[in-house]
Image (cartoon, rainbow, N blue to C red; front, side, top):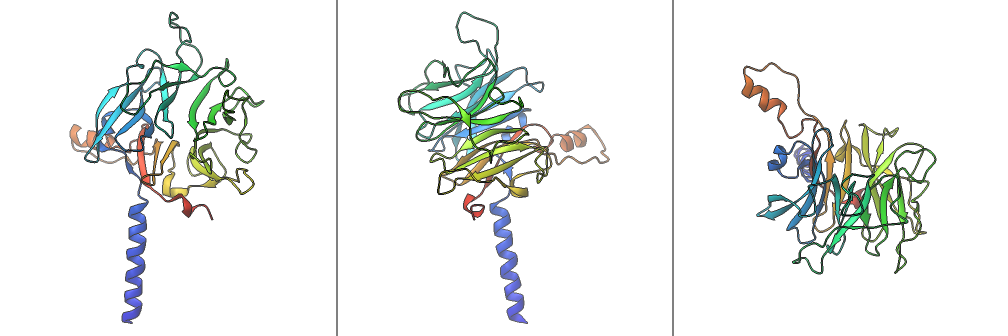
Length: 312
């Protein structure tokens, strides 16, 4: 009897440790003041992060930088090159010397009218240097349609979202390979990735061993949009995507993944909602209830997760 009790106690402790390890948390509770935050990307040394802030109607958007001190993200400031047009979805390259992003800014400086979204980037010689002026990545990636959510591998191959290269005109994920001199004509990532529905916001592993992205209204999904992961097979093909289940996903939109290998942390954006309708006594109680971090607005989250758990 004692052996059985000890065994059950061990199992309960093991489950508890696993649950704590895989518990989704706010990226930083101080971010609660930002009503519409998304698109988190973090440097290898864990000292700087970039993300987007948007108005609730998404008509205004900026990219901001945060500095981490003592495990807290502080000194959140708008980057120098943002503030005039809609800038979203920053992505730090694996060497941290380029910051890619999507923007509806015009290509020419003397123009003042916003255009469709293109992929842009800024660069620096070292992590201590300032960013350059924004540069449009140009053709064949950017078109007269929208290009979003850039993600770049170690060999500079670019993965991104667009509705310009398919017959359905729904968001799909594309790949433009870097041949050492130029980006080649974009192609659909894989038939296992792109379907007749919406697939978007893909994070590519630096070594291209996996692709993590959102599928909208997936048959096995539990929310409006769920995060999935597709691992590459030995022959270099992306396999059928694996649902990240409730370890990550909620019954709302979950999107914009960024996986940090240094800490095995998945950062992502979610509109999850834990606000419940209940009787309140005063304004303060009302505000406390509806003002939770998980209140249905676009917020940034993190979860410790070993992706090998899904690669079986």
